Structures are given as structure tokens and as C-alpha cells.
Length: 395
Image (cartoon, rainbow, N blue to C red; front, side, top):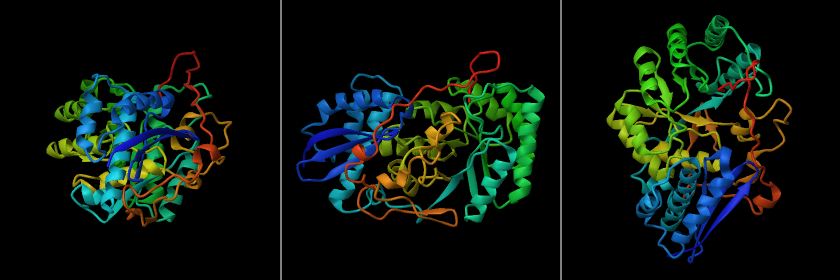
């Protein structure tokens, strides 16, 4: 079996890669470089010149070849490698007529614990969302911002004491509303400085959040380690980094209790499993990052099923627009203008907070016919929040 074509398929706010073989088996993958998908598409075109004529089943070799060919890194490149890698695993599963998790050593679990995305621009909206998740059977919520999900078009200002104390009190109200049977995964959106994060962690710990995610920008591993060393709440991070070496450096510093592997950005199924095994050696758990489409969800679930140190899977609402668009666009957009479920053949079924594994060969999902035409691609607009003084706000 040989690869005869590699095609980039941009759909709505997502970027897919299809790999075609001379035996008629096709593989599907997704790039996680969601802010710069056209750049990732060009990286795929470069890798295509190598892939044509290759055996698609030599997955590890192709991963190493692409990863090490020019020694460039970054989201656009790694998103391209990830999408291709997922597509090759999809081909392998279809070739052997089994789900990918069967090829990767078999499953460690029969269903995948998930956390439901919640958001709100007011405390009342956020509490209502968490109550809704509990009513639907979920036992964990994530993407839960104690600082609220205010539109990026709205200039920001709040005094330090109000910022910290209102956020802590908000978590307390949520805990009171849903009790201890609901885990709260707090998303801090890289909006704090190290000292602020330590202060917040000390005050919110009494409400037992499952973790604090990305309290600061991901650039400084030593700062993240300092926060983790001074926080009694576990720290989750990693969604913005791309390589096994970066995860190793964070883990060696004890900077994370939960590794947020972006399966569509850190090297696909191959890269995510490498990171999971490194995390296992450090006593850390993985929480696959997944703000993307059902194709990403299917790939994430293959990893979640096959690694022992899996904790919980991020699960966005696939009945609306992408999570990345929802949380980075302005308040003027139509939040229900598009249903991801209309462009694919599968979305996960969730029962009592656990997603059932796809049982089809490969990763278990396909695009509908003519998805590229039915749902035209939209280039992501740059929309960064500003402070009232005109400076940049991390959110």
C-alpha cells in the first residue's frame, strides 16, 4: 500500500488533512493550529512532497522524518504533523479493520470520563451552566473561568482585590450550587502573573477545584514550577506547547500535575502517547486539550482509551460553533450560526458524564460529502482584548 495523495480540506473554522492510498483507504486528521490554519496548510503541502509514494503504515518512521527534517518547530508545523499522523493512524485502523485503540495496545478503559464546557459573562449565567451540566449527568465541568467570559471587544479594568476576591467568591457560589459530586476544572486563560496566581490558588483551595489551568502565559517553565510549588491546588498546563522535550522539562520541574496534551498540535496520536508515557513516569495524569471539532475528539479518545494515566477528557459542545471561535470572537457574533455535528458522521455519545468509545475502524469519524463546499472556510480574525489604558490584556 502506498500514499498517492495528501489533501488539505479547510472547513468552516477547522483544517483537515486527508491522506489517500492506492488501495482506496483514506485517512482523516485535524490540525490544532487554530489561530494560524492557513500557515499549517502550507506546512502540509511541504510534507506532501515527502509522503507521496510512502507506505502509510510506517507511522513512527514518518513522524520522525517530518519532525526532524529541518528541525523547525511551532504551532503551524506541529499542527501539520499532527493532522498527518492522525490520518495515518486512521488508515492503519481501517487497513486492519479495528479502531485505532486496538492497534495501540488495546484500551485501558471502556468509556472516557469527560468534562462539559461551561461559560458565562455573569455569575448567574455561569452557575446556570454548571447546574445544566449536572442535570445532564456530567460529573465535571471545565473551561470554567472564575473571572467570567467577557467579550474581547470590552475594555478591561478591575482593581486587584476585586479581581481576586470576586473570582474566589464565584467559585464558592458554584460549589454551593452543585455540591461535591461535581469536579470544577478552573480555566485561568493565562491571564495572571505568578504572584497573582499563587495568591488566587491559596484563597480558592478551600473549594477543592480539580485543577487550575494555565494561570500564566506558557513561556516560562520556571515560573510555572514556582506556582506549582506554592499552590495546594494541582496545576494543569501544556496546551500551547508542542514537543515531548518541553513536556519533559515541565514535568521534571514538577510544574504540572495534569499534562494538557493538544493531540492535534503536539504530534498527533503518536506525539500525545509519547508525552503520556513521560508523564506517567513523573506521576502526572493527562487531560487531552480539545477545543476543536469531532475529528479532534475522536483522535483524543483513541489516546484516552490507551494510556493508563488518563484523567479526564475536555469535551466541547459539537452542536454549535467551535470553542475557539466562541471564546475568542466578539459579543456580536451568532453563537448558534453553525453546527459541527452537521459536517461529520459521528459525534460522541455521553452517558452520565462518560463518552462511549467509537467502535468503527480507524478513529471512527468521517467528513460528510462536500463538507468543504457546504461549510466554507473562514480565516480567523485577530481579536485581542485591551485594557482601558490601551495596553494588551492576556485572556
